[in-house]
Amino acid sequence: MKFNIIGRRYWWFLLSALIMIPGLISLAVQGFNLGIDFTGGTLLDLRFQRAVTVAEVRDVLQQFNLENSTIQLATGGEAGASADVFIRTKVLDENEQTAVLAGFGKKLGTFDVLRVEKVGATIGSELTRQAIIALVISWVLMILYISYRFEFTFAVSAILALIHDIIVVLGLFSLLHKEIDATFVAAVLTIVGYSINDTIVIFDRIRENLKTQRKSESFQELVNHSIWQTMTRSIYTVLTVLFCAVALYVYGGETTKNFALALIIGFASGAYSSIFNASPIWVTWKEWQDRRRLAAKVKGAN
Image 1: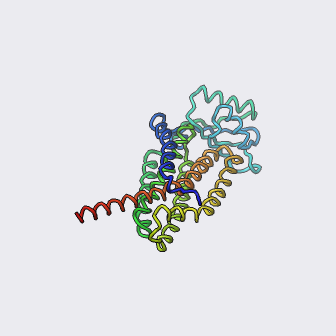
Image 2: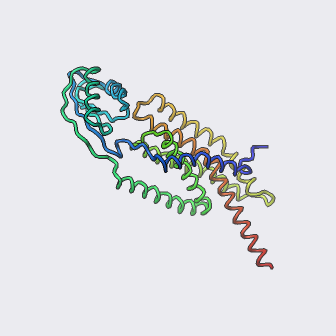
Image 3: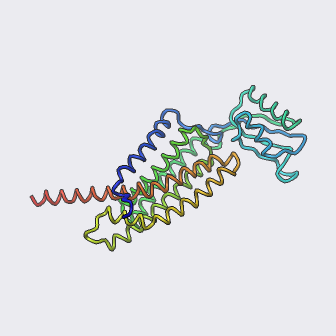
């Protein structure tokens, strides 16, 4: 007898709530730690007496908690190194600028300061608003398409699972006070694509099994059976993508760590919500509809 996932669905809903609520509270109280892509920052244009690498520059910046800064090397010179370096970091006051420049001089040798100026955000409020609108539009289109291919209840259940995943990622990043930048936005969009795909695979199996449903078989039994039929595929898929995301987090550079962390959280949440949220929501909805129809039939008979 396989573990009854659907029969314990209210426990899964409670677990999801316990994960999301602290994140939502953190979002309301402390918000996000927005990176320079959203807030703007300081641009340092430096020319060293010798060619330096990105790793060397980042090691110096790490002393000042600026390791997530954007570092660009000018073209030319030996591969992977250049004397001309562009650094985009958070807004620095004069004392911080002096300290950072002194750190470069001490670690990397003599250099000339070609330019120091404040720069604006690359992702402004208008672009953020447009991204949110685009995400909402994509959800509406998903609902329409899934409703056409499956049914409306499937579509809403899938979108609710997607919203669960996004809230989990946003909430945990707020709780951990991790920096939000342009790569984080890309990670969220990647998570949406992964999560909806995993959910649709399970829904497709449910739809196929509905065609051969026995009269003695309840929605709970049918969906539980369908989930277990796709369980191996779900486990293989999530482990494959998690291996890649963990490798990127462990062996990737500092600039990719938050991106990889968002993927790890999102992929794990997506696998969980596809199995323990989306299908249970659909079953709960269908049983509620059946109770309403039965109540209406009894009322009509009286």
